[in-house]
Image (cartoon, rainbow, N blue to C red):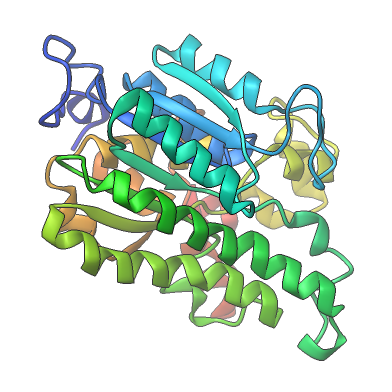
Length: 325
């Protein structure tokens, strides 16, 4: 399927006369849209015509524990609108049940339903380096480990529980769980017990919720980027999106890195796929598999497959990440 043809997909409630805006008339929530894959998914859903509520903890007047002030949810909403959709920023801590309930009430009041829920909550990178990776579970500070589970599991459960009643009002409910790794790649231990639990939980959430949404004609799917060139990752290597290849000297595997738009384009295509339930419900997939299925490419025209590269590298022998672009 080509990228051109995937843009012509329509859903039952899509606005007529907009073949290149297949999500026109659809209502989406991207939880955790401040930056990275969350922001990119919000923008691509907007580009396809959706009204997108975007949430996060960093605003123009307040930073979250992540400590970055260069990206805000207000900016994400503006990018959604500039792309052709309608972006609505709502500051929300998804560990605060009352705030999440208030958001659900607002969307019900303003829209009457929710069609697409993207659960891209995380914000725990600052807990990983030095604190988690390379340490046994009993060597990991308990407070850090429990915070990882709050950010990567509890926030997802709260959001799903409080928005699914609104989502099943849609004629084609879509619940997307975003994580790091697929059911296949995560057969390998993810270096630390807390991180392993946090990144496998969304896969099981999608599996279980797929069973529950099936009777409503819905789809629950877990998706993962590969080696993501998020704003935080670029800053870690001291590069920008324009010169990101300079970081390969520090980390050769970065040659297979992908921009946030890669996963986002795949998710937008999945959202516009009328046959998505039969294809994806309850399953786990990656940006690379979505790209192959829907004919989309990364911003530079490439089609990287980081998980295939890492699998080959684990097998031993000489493997070049450039061969997986």
